[in-house]
Image (cartoon, rainbow, N blue to C red):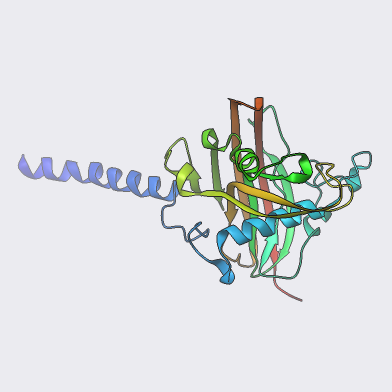
Length: 251
């Protein structure tokens, strides 16, 4: 009888072990796939890469009456995946178009060279005196925006790397604190700020992957930042994007 009881417990133990391991795979804690905000990828601070992302974002004109010339945040195409690239170790990807329905992601296809890291903003804020803010305090408040209440998740190749609903501490762990910088707006920029360089601030949540190997990869993220904040009545920001990326070896 004791032997039978011992034998019958083996499947249960195996099931518990499998379930635990499956849970680990669905929510990655080892961060083999992404850089953390305290790291210095390619000899730059994470904040410097955040600034780099915003430089690229603001360098792209937005001609709204022509889809082929509209900013890729709102009108994406595979060709636009090549916009604003500079030949460095990191590949710029635009963040998501604002959506009211987050049920299904917007699917975006990209082809990039092997060995590139990839960076995209999940949700963030860039503010400048070009938008009418007068003081550094106003700029800092603008950068913080609705970010403290943001809900977001992200996965790389189907492995979840952050999820504020499963782990609220991710909101602090992946937060790029607001910092002072200069922001340069191109002509006909997305925010319709007069062309030029202004004192600004940046804050937010970003994905910066480790360099991607040749083959097919996915980057998926969803964010919802909605709050009634003084100065930002009924402000919100929601998006859901799935990047399907083909990484090619050099010819």
